Length: 132
Image (cartoon, rainbow, N blue to C red; front, top):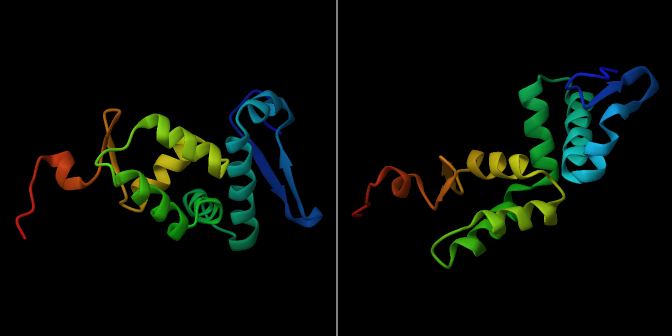
C-alpha cells in the first residue's frame, strides 16, 4: 500500500479482497464516513471494472440512494433554508463524509453550494426569479 500517500484502499480481485490502508487507521477511526465511502468505492471498481469517477458514483448511489437523500433534503428545505450543521448531522446519519454527502446532493441538483453558502435552487444562487 501507499503508506505515505493518499491511497485509502485498494482491491485484490484474485483474492476477492478489499484492502484498507493501515497507515490511515486513525483517519478511519475519526471519520467512519471516509472509510465507508472508500470501501463502497472499491466495491464499485470490483463490480463494474470502472474509472475513478464511476466508482465514486457507484459508492454515492450505494450509500446515499437518490430517493432517501431527496426525501431527507426536501424535509430540511421545508423551512426555507438549510444549514451546514444540518448537513453534518445528515452525513453522520448516512455514515459518510460531509464532502461525499454534499457532492451527492449537488450532483442530484437538490441544493447548490457556492463559496460556503447553501442555496435551495440554482435560481436562488444566481439571483433569478421564476415567474411561471
